[in-house]
Length: 175
Image 1 (cartoon, rainbow, N blue to C red):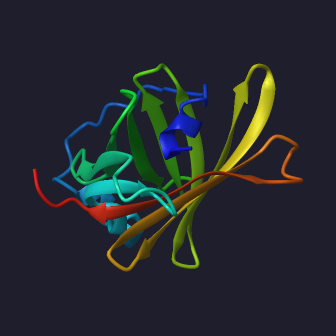
Image 2: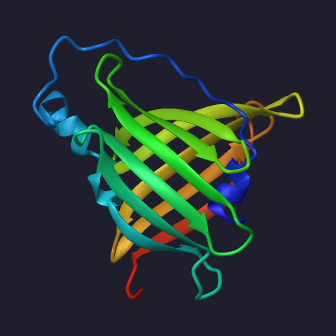
Image 3: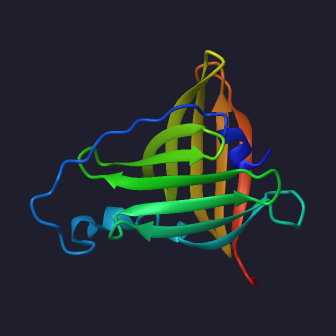
């Protein structure tokens, strides 16, 4: 199963208005601390492959910094099936953790949180599907020539975990 086919099932989202600033900060000044750069290894233009799968990409992903460098933005486009998704990842200084919100063109939403542990970004969350709570944990880490991302899900409160997806991002070459 591809990464976002599984996550496309997650129907959770939260929005809140941001307080207005009295004067705009210098570009990037608000997010200059080192914690805001912990996810920089994921930045790039990537071809995405299922680990152990075919040699053809399952998706293309563009990972950039936006909003004066404060937010890591992902644009994910599946190679087949038309799935498109975007994630927005931000280090929340007030809570000393990372937050990611994932949205798709299929109306699915997911929020997960975590941070850097043992050279890996580790995020956890949950979502409701057909009235059942499902836990999810996701990891990202740099590997030779790319980034690996893996997720597992649990439908029994964390007693057992099943693989949801296992992907590797390699730098895109070509058109």
